[in-house]
Amino acid sequence: MWAQAQVFSLHVVCRHICVSYKVWRWRWINYLLLLCVYFSSFYICEILSSLCWFNVLVTLQISDLKWASRWDTYLLMNEAQIHWFSIINSLMIVLFLSGMVAMIMMRTLHRDISKYNQLETQEEAQEETGWKLVHGDVFRPPAQAGLLCVYVGTGVQFFGMAVVTMIFAVLGFLSPANRGGLMTAMLILWVFMGLFAGYASARLYKMFNGTDWKMNTLKTAIMFPGIIFVVFFILNSLIWGEKSSGAVPFGTMFVLVFLWFGISVPLVFVGSYFGFKKPTMENPVRTNKIPRQIPEQAWYMHPVFSILIGGILPFGAVFIELFFILTSIWQHQFYYIFGFLFIVFLILVVTCAEITIVLCYFQLCSEDYHWWWRAYLTSGSSAVYLFLYAALYFFTKLDITLIVSGILYFGYMIIISYSFFVLTGTIGFYACYWFVRVIYASVKID
Image (cartoon, rainbow, N blue to C red; front, top):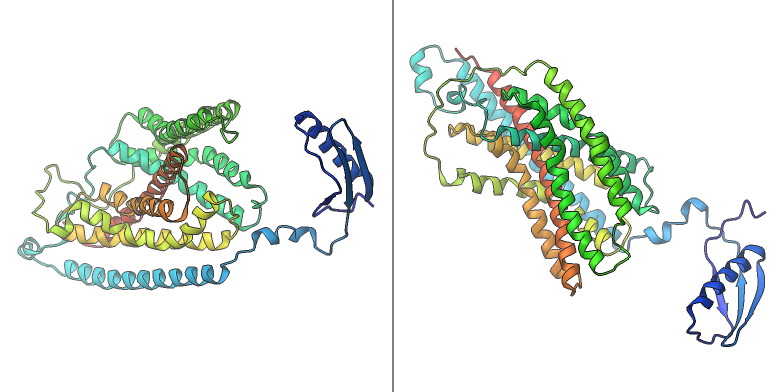
């Protein structure tokens, strides 16, 4: 009978309690209570000591609640209707904007490509303006090309980790009952996704005519995790200083370092080795030896302005869901609607890609061919708005007065925002790179 029974709740009725100041007595009392529950459904436990007497009545009642539904009480959301309407509203707005942007871009590009392909004389080609004029410079390697390769490779690693984690969560392998299971799965997946980080970084580095692939691989394996680890270690030291039980033990820190240098770094080198052995990616147009002079740009095409504008739409796709995620993290509530989170993630990918493509097209039309870094920063700037929203959430929703607690909050939000920057920046970069290759491969260039 006991092999088939499951205990859902325990109701303890205390007949008489006298306070004891000897802590060791309470430990033995807890052990005796557990023995009472185990051996009988009705048991009176009487403990005699020099200070107090306990008469405990323990009654086990059979419940109709199924074992699979035991978490429903804790996972019930009080504002379910508001949550659903907010998600659907955000989804419809973003899909509508995405459809409008896609339609405008398809019509405009089709007109441009048809016009450029109908030019017959050299004089007409010289009089023409627009993105075709920078075809000889559009694939010129950018400044700090190695650093861009490092961030792109890290973004691929982060993207793979996020996708696989959410797929497992949607399928139900990551239960909200085990709150540490999600973080453990993300760390393990991050380690093994280092293979793809090295491959992507090496492929891009070779296209930029880089030669020191080993140093580039080492930066890919160490830069982003190193920054995160330093910030995390400082925050954990503050928790140690407060003598809190929430501090990460030294043994766990050692395991993290082992996973980093023992598994992740070698996998990054393996992926980089195979990526660098691949043939160089051929661009659809040749690059001129002498860079073209960039004309004076309008104020709205200034890099800082256009980059900050580009981050608004991706942030708008996730800010409603971000509220529930922050509530789950900082107010100890359960987050279990991974299906909606996966949908929001897909919307984020689409919006990052489209807003980067649109702004890149405007930039090339103004004959500015420095699009590599701007493509990464345009969608990555949504992390700035994420951090600002986290600051607003801190001052409006949380009641934190201790300085150390505030430092911990903003420290962890810096880590989250930095990771979000790497993820969204990589999505925008690859979308823009695909777009530039397609449009310049579609026109006749002598």
